[in-house]
Length: 134
Image (cartoon, rainbow, N blue to C red; front, side, top):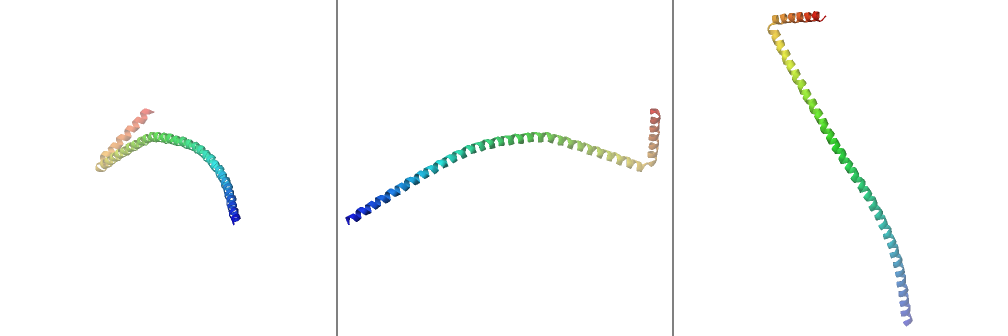
């Protein structure tokens, strides 16, 4: 029976040695894997630095373009303000002409004889001016 105990102990020692060998092999593989992971992460970190630099440059260029666009837009706003003022002036001039036309129409309808005489005088003045011009 004692021999059985020695055999059992020997089997346990062999099993333990096999377990240790497999554990050491596994740990070496894990170490290689972790080394590869570290290299990969270092590469990714370098690439991210490059991407970050490019993104920063792109953002700076975008900000410069936006500022330039705002300056040009402000210049164009002045042009539109001028056009608006010009449009208001034309509108006021048209309104004045309309009032003058209405006044002339009203006067003409009130006293047609004076209008006829004024037209004759105007025609005569234009004829004299044309003759003098020739």
